Image (cartoon, rainbow, N blue to C red):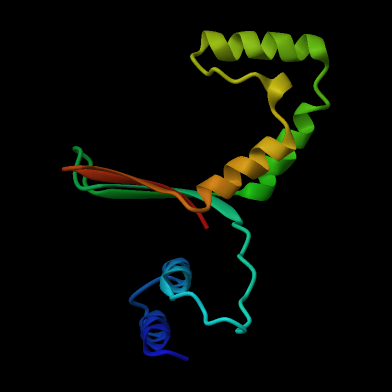
Length: 141
């Protein structure tokens, strides 16, 4: 075990970080590792399990706050599969309401392979939005 991993585990044991934070740090270490030499065995890329949205703010009247939403990607995958069960007439009405609300999504075009492609791309992307009073992060893990 390398020194960085040991430090992460020690911080976790001391209660300085949560298990989620430790897992993210370990994942970050794996991504930073240099490519292995030829002939060495590598672990397959881990499939992300969650879409996470983290919002923190310093003080907007009620004091500081933190929101951490973790959406299982299996839930999203199941939702996409369920859209195929919606009758065509209902899809038309739902699409019209979505567009009226400013959400340009066509449920008839939503397919499981599209979600997998999106998840694959999100796996490598972290979106950070900072302002002086708060921070928003969206990422897959």
